[in-house]
Image (cartoon, rainbow over all chains, first blue to last red; front, side, top):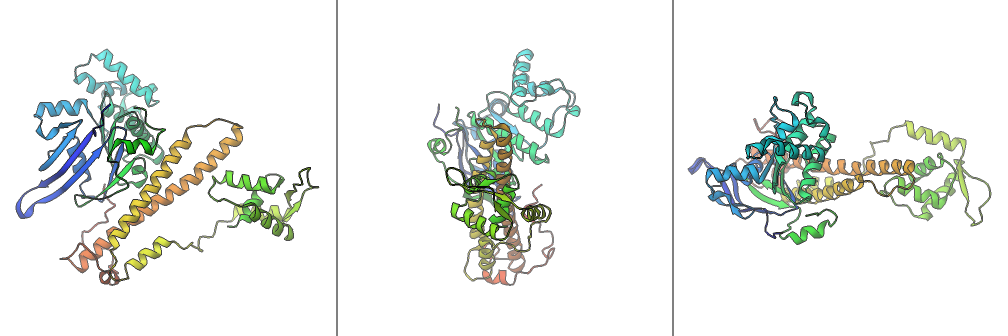
Length: 246
Length: 219
């Protein structure tokens, strides 16, 4: 058990362009997300939400400042080490489903594990466990076009989160789903975080952000406010003792 | 609405005495409207005077008097179910009044009024959501049929609060976007902080700012 934050952004700035035409997508943002904590990021479009998420997932590099995932400075990693980090330690849940149509639900979920070198049989058994956890076991051998939008979304989430990932990043994960199915998606995310992951959720929906432990408000690339600042994991545990399992 | 119709609706379900009415009213409305027993008896006395309820038999061994609905009481309850709630009598909302004044009074940092309210409302919304998620996991079952119905009532009340809080955050987003638009069109150079004067002038027609779009349309 570590007391370090899973995700640390230290005075992160991301600037597009230079000189007079420079656009500061993020300007000096610092943020820590702890194990067992789900942080939501809200703000109008263009406020830097997605930039922040991309930096946290090492999909983009900051112009200045540091991004640490599980204590490792990802801004200093070589491309292959970065790819490994994204494959093994960071879970992504994006709005676009992108399930591979020619693969079944179980095969879709198993894919990242297989790509990572796990034997197919073992990867499948992990995938089935993941489907079980979502109450979707019955869909294991179904192809995406034989699933509802909500089912596809949840399968995509299972794939995004498969394996022992300690950082979970979600960008408007409920997409265009109806409110009930959208809630299922958040429940999955919440469950994963309660089991010990650190989560960062970008959303413009207050109802979804309300699933988070903390909401930070971003405006013009700057954090302008927050619903609280658990700068230690202890304050998190104090908040809801019934949740923490890890 | 009044407590009156709530109690009558419960009596339509069967005879009850005062303490029972109070407990059931609170339980069935998810504790959203606590009553005191004095209020219940005052209401019952008035309803009895108006011929809408009547005493049902003699007091029990503990001296409790049961009440029942009269025919005209029953008709009144039936009418209540069929008639929509009057929304013309809007309750006064302090936040609405506060913001309306904030944009017209000089020297108020409206943006920070909006943001601090949004943070507070988000916190409230988070607490409600926690309650809801907690309530979704079944507790110890007593009488399944009644407790199911009550859980449902409680969930509906809770969700109403959630929708209201969500609507408030959306409205605050809208207020902010509108203020930004008004500031941008009336004072393009110093767009950061709209002054009270800007806002007083600020009946900017929709579309007057060209391509400016409300901040909420993010996708």
